[in-house]
Image 1 (cartoon, rainbow, N blue to C red):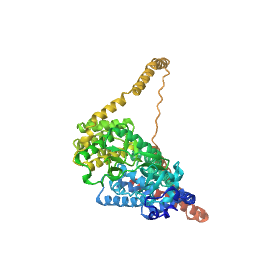
Image 2: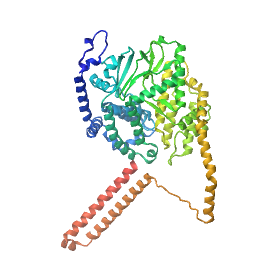
Image 3: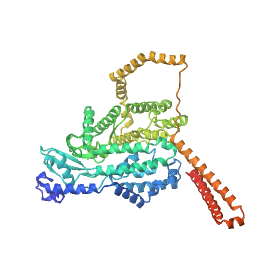
Image 4: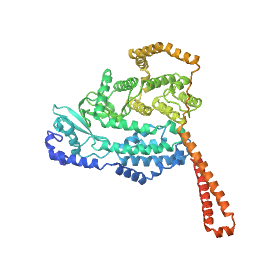
Length: 589
């Protein structure tokens, strides 16, 4: 196997392995090992592994204990806070032990602070996405299969990965034309593992959804959250999508001189060969590498780039310092990880933009109205109470300072939290965008702490407004408006004539459909079941009383009557105790 080829045995002119050193026998052995490992991933085995791991860390009761949801309320004492921290620590260990599906799920849950209490998200934020690397022979087999020229694409490739995460491993290599490159290879079993785990998680989530109180269930779409998570995770496993994201955002960055995206040299479904950035990530580059003016230029370009993509409906969900590299030669800032890139519809981007404008101008009422276009009220929402809470919150964000906790990413998180507390439906992508915006602000603050990030972003207001208006009033939007207006004008006389004819013949009908909520139906069923059991208990008790009141002579003459009456009496007692227990349990829940 290639992993047995020590680097020290290679020629000093080469730094790694060549295609000639990876024989057909090595490839065959690696493929057989991969196939065997994939066949070992089944729903039964994974389900048992999940149950065993949750039980090992004392968390299995979370799936069946309705009382645990009391800890999710906002007013908690110190003991309950510590209990949630303990649950978060155990969940983190469980997710790390169960592998990539749960590590990515934990990273998504960190962004949903409106659903998960802060003590738990604080612990999950420490999830480690660094795992021991798989043997290089496995990755070499994938490279040889998916690249047109296989391993011969490279002059050499270093078998020691420069990065090993739960989804992929990254290697340094040199192409035949002499260019240095980074090779990102998806782990061979990850796709099968995701498909198997998600099928199990969906069943568990449906069970949890049923345990939620009706108001919370109306606003928290847990199955939708899992579906979005699965969709975004499978996109991360397809390197062609990541390469397309890189090429699209490189075009967006063309107007900025100090930021860039690595060039894509080759791509396949599970392989991405891109430009190697020789430098440091944003948190490690030497202090004296960039002057204040150079740091300010890069911060400004990063901020304006993020605003530009936001106005176009894109967002990078993870622009933290570790994903930004400073090249030691050009001193450009390169964004290197493009797996978590999302989109938002124009309605939400415009609503967020209007909300931020009104907030900075201290127009709390208008900001609250704009917020109602971001979160969607449900029948359980009290609009007056919701607006009161929003207006009180917006006051804190009018003049937020650099490094203040009242940043705009935190503002959106607060909106989501208040929306959930008031039973509003939250768009699933909104929390991920807020996480990305907060990470972008943290990156800018790390790069140039002397300048307020908010001030830099505010300087792009005119650009935002221009793009917004151009999108709102472009040819296609106006053509659609004219078409709809033409249809209305053309059909209005005929429709009015039909209504008048039906009125003249007294034939106008209004169909009113009353849809009963599923939770109400469930409550009615529970109530009817309890009434039925109560009637049965009363009937059994009455029948037992009549039978046992016949007298000793009759009961001695017919022993079966005594046994029947006693059985009915015990049956009525058991039903009564069960009903009392159910009533007490429902009040506690």
